[in-house]
Amino acid sequence: VGQTGSGKTTIIKNILKWCIYNQIPFIDFDSRKDHFSLARDFPEVKVVKVLEDFRINPLKPPSHYVPEKVWISRVCMIIASSFGFFTGSKDFLISNVYELNQIKKTPDTATPNLIDLRDFLRRKEKMIENRFGPNRDYIARNINRLEAIITTNREMFDVDTGFDIDKLSRSYVIMDMDGLDSDLQRFLINLILYSIIYHRMYSNERGSHARPVRIIVDEARRFFPKDAGLKHIDFDDIGILLSQSREFGIAFVIAEQIPNMLAVECIAESKFKIILNISNGTDLKLIKDSCNLDSSQIELINSIPIGTAAVKISDNPYPFIVELDSYNDNGTLNAEEILKK
Picture (spheres, rainbow, N blue to C red):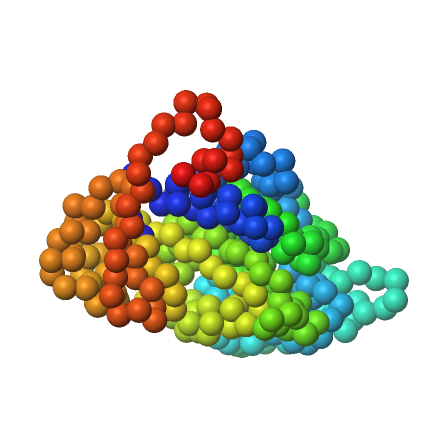
């Protein structure tokens, strides 16, 4: 955590370089194009322009290991939580996705996508006799939400399959989220995360057998907002998601400049807390309480210079200061020497 200009972006880029040197895959959700320079310096890093290049059928299980019924329930929860469905609408959505899959399930047909689902609900809407019953309301609400998702992102979702989750989680990928509204960002991050978790869960890749992958989320309040459980029905289990991710080899790097707008579970579940310059009183109080700091330490954080950070490790009662010596590159150092610096 740290305010603008305190060094968060530099730390993230150095963590990503460390991952490359140590052959640890990462998926970096970058909404401001802050980390694109890595792709220029490292040919193995791929930038995926989500609006132009990313294709996904959310209704298709992420791999053949994942049972269809299990995935339908999960993906409907993701859709509902990301786009603000109500509980009744979510349950109605699950039953209709399952019904649509059963209708289209023949050996020569593909898994239906979001556009197929919207068209299916439109046909159902015309068939309902009681036009003022609860089902009518549920259908109308689902159609409206799906229309909002599809209208501006049709190419992204008008496919049978989409990305290969196993390949994605073995790569160095920067996902360019620029231009996507916060709901769609939340939806795609959730979708990719749970795709990795469910693929690994049902292929029994967990614990010491799970290949490590880093998930980087800058401006994390977009994805882990404070009081999310009051606004999004599936966000009461952020702590469970974060702890469950570890079981499947997933480690998060979460950066935020306004920590008091971040879900408290993110701070509670973080093993390493890196605190850069913070001046907002509400943020400082949160840092003080979550890191068990005293008033003099908080005063220091208020004036901490660039290149210096307070660090708190969860199983260590005492925070400590890390200072980096300044150095000039002047174009004379190679990438490995810069990393050592």
